[in-house]
Image (tube, rainbow, N blue to C red; front, side, top):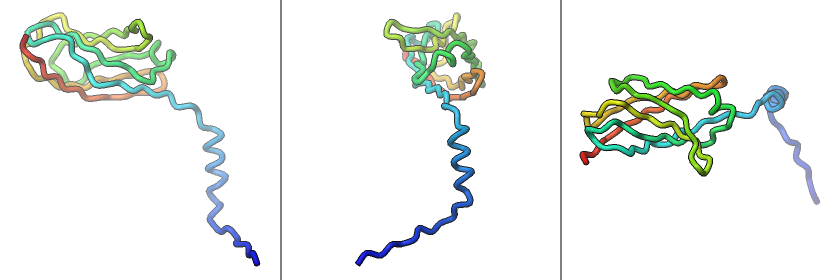
Length: 124
């Protein structure tokens, strides 16, 4: 013989949960990768940070700036032949210190992200 069990629980939060699902907007995410350095100690810095999950609307309005650094960093946003978007991090003057740490702040109209980076430059 089958018996039925009554489901019990607190359903007072259910309408709030449904409302949150209905009002939820797609999350625009930006996922900067580790930094890839293409230069050596005592040369101007040339490095790249690839941006995974970057939507065109984010890239179009993206601003990058360095926080907490003594390096005079410059930035440009570029796309390679395969369509991957990346930030070029560079300096015009040679970098004399082998180790550096800094934070990059990525800002776009709907969000902001800060990521810390460490560089260890090899002598040539």
